[in-house]
Structure formats: C-alpha cells, structure tokens
Image (tube, rainbow, N blue to C red):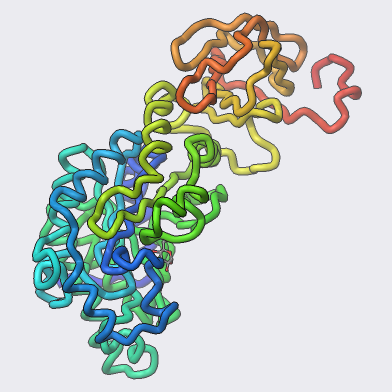
Length: 432
Ligand code: GLC
C-alpha cells in the first residue's frame, strides 16, 4: 500500500528528484510525437468521432479494418533516429478509447481487433533498438467508455472511471519495462486534480516507475509544461508539441498536406527557439492508415537530421535558458538566431551575408576564437569596443542540408553581452 502524500508534500517530494530524473530530457531537445489509432484510417483528423458526431457502434467498425503493416513502429523509430530525435511519444490510447496494447482492462484493443497485435510492445521494442527514450501518451478523456462523460455528474460513474484510467496506466507502466515519459492529455470532463484522483494515480505511477517524467495535463503541474502548436519559452521546463502541418495530429492525405508541411528550415527554426529558450520540441507525425511514415515528413526530417549531426553543440546538452525572448542574453544580428552553452555562443544564420562580412553588437569581451561549427574552419574576426566583426567569409552558406550555417563564438569565460540600445549613435563606438 502506498503512503499517500497531500498535494503540497507530493509537489515537494517530486521536486527533490526532478533534476536527476529530468537530466536526459533537458539535454535531448528534440523528440517525435506519433499520433496513430483507428482515426488514422479516415484521413480526417483524430477528432473525427466528435467532429462528425459518429455514434459509437458505427465508429467501432474501424477496429475491424485497422491493419498496421508489419514493422510500422520500427519505421517511425528509424526515422526519428535519422532526424536526430532522442525520444518518442506514442498515443497508446487517444480520445477514441481504443488501446494499442494487449489490455485486460479495455477489451477494445488492437489484440482483440484488427491486427491482433500489441502495437505498444512493437513501439517499445523499436525505441530500444534505436536507443530512443520511450514516452506513452495516455488520454484522460474517453469517448468510448460508458462512464467517460457520466463521470462528470455521477459519483459512482466517476469512481469506476477513475479506476479504469488508473488501471490502464498501471498496465502500461507495469508490462513494458522502463518507461521514460507519461504524457497525459485532455482532462475532461472533470476540472480538477481531485476529480481525476490525479494525486493518487500519479503517486501510484511513480511507485511503478521511479524515474518517470510526467507532463502537466492531469491538473497537476508535475514535471513539465506542454505549449501546444506554439513555441513559447517559460521559466519552468517546457516542451512544445507541434503538428507537422498546422492542421491535424492524425493522418491527413500527404499529397495535399505537403503544401502545409514544415520545411527543414522551419523545423530548424523551431529547434532554435527551443535551444535558445531551454525547452524541447516534440514534433508530430501522423502515420498513414497502414502505419507508414507520411511521405511529406520524410525529406524534411532527413535533412534536419543531417544538419543536426553537423551542429550538435548548438542544440543538444545543457544550454543557457534565455528567459526573455525580447532581450536575448546572446544576440545575433537580426538575420540569425542564437543559442549558448555558457562558454560559446552559436549564431544560426538564416540569411547569409553575400559580402561575407558580419557585424554583431553588444559583446563586451573579445571571443577567443571564431569558427564554423560544421568543420571548425577558423573565421577572421576583430573585436572593436562592443562589436564583433567577422570578415572574409565565403559568399554562400557553407551548410549543404538546409542552408543554415552555424558560427561558433568561443569565449574564455562566460561571454558578456549587453543588448545594443535602440540608438547606436549614443555609444559613439565606445563601450556601454
Ligand atoms: C489536443 C488534442 C489532441 C492531441 C493533443 C496533442 O489536446 O485533443 O488531439 O492529441 O492535443 O497535444
């Protein structure tokens, strides 16, 4: 029996272990979200049951035709690895209520219906094969369970439903070895952690998996926040989750979606916002009805992976968290982004200077060395008052994967940066 803590003590308790539990996650930066379920067959978004008001009996027919091809999860994991991602999160059961595993609690699952296979098991095996950390998305809201909405106003239904959700998560965290992330979603219809019994449920989950990281969607703050479809830095640990096309998490026709899909440049820009703001990017793919990776994601993610393999230091590991987006601790020159590990500043050049010269204001100390991060080639530079001037660089970006060349400014000690004021003439070329 668990000795249950009250909210205050629980929050204090999990804070004690947070730094060690979160270490890998804080350095990982980039993960893959996978939305796969019965809805994938429709190509009309994972909310179709609600959006089209489909009666349960009619929707259930999708369970019979659900037929992921052999090796689908392996294909997702292989791409995630290739893209430079460090972890994956799979929708083990989305709001539609269909479990992708051999559940004893929920007979509406992929072993009783459709493929008659445990897709969660295949996913876990694939993550381990490619050395990716493993995350389970688990919906709280359930459109299939008879108590899924009754629980809002019927206390007996709520007791049953709370138990159901807890038992499902218990299966997930007991039967697949070490799991790294529990990713809750949509805590409706109850509106408080008391309504969901989250305090009890999460303590139970942590007892099963002491190193687990839990997101903030069970009405408790837990370990990290989850901005959705926007990338906004905050002071607490955060992970932005993004669709691949701004339209849908579940599969939509790739041939049409490709026009809305993110390019490698846009993805690298997202990664920059995360690297600069101390957060992570969880980028979604919605596999096709048979579980294949959607075509529109392959090329951009492959290019991003190649780019990342040459620019690791600017992205992974412990980076300085810039808390103020409008006054970056380490600035660029208006056409580049930045990130910093506290010793070096990395300039991510979106637009390359055709004359091969670059000036960056606000640096109070001279760097020790300036180089291309990709291959270490030194760059000629001069430090004049608070400006760094880079000279005689090539007239075209060096990067061949996305055209985004990263320059490393290496300092002896922590770089001192002061945001250049709106009126440069005030400084008259002198120090601030
Ligand atoms: C939303 C949606 C859901 C999606 C999730 C991802 O809450 O309900 O479809 O899975 O966001 O963050």
